[in-house]
Amino acid sequence: MYTINAHTKISTIIHENKAAIHAITALAKPLEKLKNPLLRKLMASRVTIAEAANMGGCTIHDFIKVLEPLGFTFIESVSSTDIKIAADTKPEWLTQTPIEQIHFFDVRTILQSGNDPLKEIMQRFKGITSNDVLCIINSFIPVPLIRLLEKDQALTYTETISDEEYRTYFLKFNKRKKAEKVETLPQPDFVMMEGADSFAKLLNQYVADKIITIDVRPLPMPGPMESILSQLEKLKQDEILLIHHKRIPVYLLEALANQSWMVHIHTISNTEVDMMIHKK
Image (cartoon, rainbow, N blue to C red; front, side):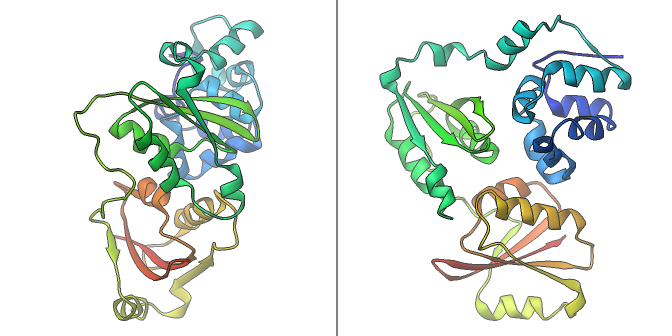
C-alpha cells in the first residue's frame, strides 16, 4: 500500500505504479498529455494531485476513486473545503509580497499571434529587483520556464484561475552575487548547429520513407512543442524527424535535455528554422 495526499507529486504516484498513468489520464482530457512519455517527464515531477485536479477540472475525490484500487491510500481527510484549500494554498513568500511588488505580464496575446514571449519574460525577470515577483499569465502551465528559472534564481508557484488562465509567480531572490544570463540558451552537447550543406548531407543519409516531416509553423503555442513530442514518441531508431519551425524552440530543447536524442538545427532566417531529430 502506498500512502499519498493532495500534495503528492504525480511522478511519485507513477513511479510506484505505472497503471496510474491510464487511471489519471482517463479522468479528464487536459490530463491526457501525461500519456506522452516526454510530456509526462516534463510535467509529472512539477504537478501535485491537487494541481492536476485543477488542471483537469475534476476533484481530489476523483483521484481517490481511481487510485485506491491500485493500492494507494490517502492519509488525510478530503472534504470539499479541504480540497479547495489544498489546491489553492499560496506559499508564505507570495502572501507576504505587497501587490505593488508583483509585476503582471499576460503573454496570451503574444502566443496567439504565433510569437515566443521567452526573451521578453527573461528581460522582465532580469529587470525586477530582489524580493519582487513576476507573474506570468498564460493559457497553460509553462513548465519549461518554471524549470529554467528555478534552476537559476527563483521560487515559483502556479495558481489555476480557469481552464484558460494560469498564473505563475516567480520570486526573485538574491541567492547569487551576480545573476547569470539566462535569456540565451547555451548549446548543449546533444544540439548541433548546421549550415545548409551539412544539414542537407545529413538528410541525404536517410531514404525518403524514413524521413518523417512535419510543419509546425501554422500551429499556435504550445501546439508546435506538443506536435513534435507526439511524433518523437513514435519515432523509430532508423527514422529521422524533419521539422519546419519559425524559431529555435528553447522550451523543446529544455524538455529533451538528458534524453537519448540528437538535434540538428539549421537557421534559414529570423522566421524560418529547419530541425532534424533522431535517436542517438
